[in-house]
Length: 104
Image (tube, rainbow, N blue to C red; front, side, top):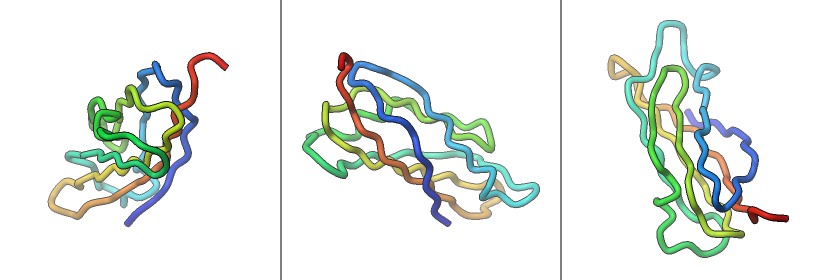
């Protein structure tokens, strides 16, 4: 199953953690055992889009994705794949992240 979430743009110099909530997609008793996040360029140019992902942590039903850096004006697509406990499968949530100037 794949879902989408909306998050606000990130300032170029900002580092922040986005909590991605998988609870609407979990059945009663299900939990997340691990997760990974991948980053690709949706629009613009960045030779190393994976550097936008700082770290990923799981506190089921949340997956906390640390976002850092990025190229001004680029829009990234971030995909978070959460592995369910007891080999129950994988859930995915994607979102777009725009990098905006630090000073308007």
